Image (cartoon, rainbow, N blue to C red; front, side):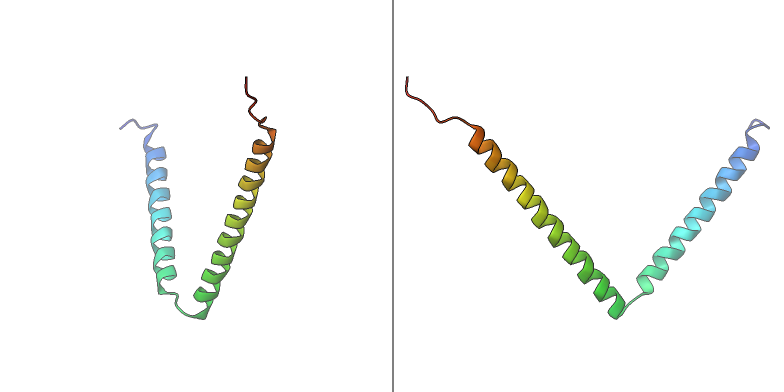
Length: 77
């Protein structure tokens, strides 16, 4: 390897190792958490998902109704 690129390669390897270690530690800590807090968090995310789904449905229905009202009635020739 080129001497000019060696420090960069070492820095990248150390950074990659540190990030990987932190991700593995976070994943392990997250899997170890159990209890009421996790249930509350899941319920909050479920409620957020339902609200987003309802908002998306309302938006698409209003867009469809607007487009449907803009289409002219067919006229016989």
